[in-house]
Length: 120
Image 1 (cartoon, rainbow, N blue to C red):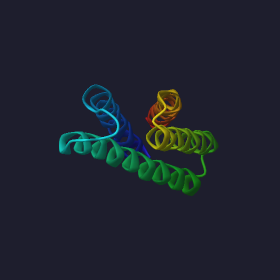
Image 2: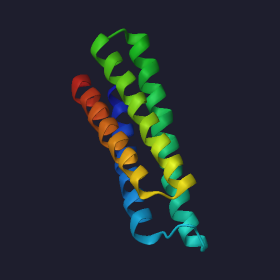
Image 3: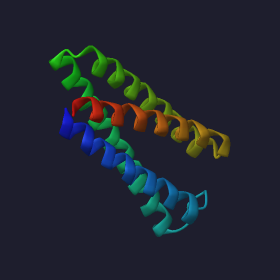
């Protein structure tokens, strides 16, 4: 649990970096290869965060620790909120949906770092 939550915390840091890069260097709709590359990196980090979120949930179910189980469920909910916000933002190109991505990101960061510190 310790290492999985540590890896997800680092992946969330990479996701934040790629999100800020997307904010600064991308214009929607995408017109250049470099813009698509930055957005693809952001999406790859988001998928890895989702994968490790599922891994943390599976470990919480296996170990049977109630606090970590609740935090991992909340983590998956926040990851889903961020994913829905990202898909809505890219699909409609309405910047208001970026607030959903931010809410999901910070909720997931809180849950993941809480799991990490609880595991220590």
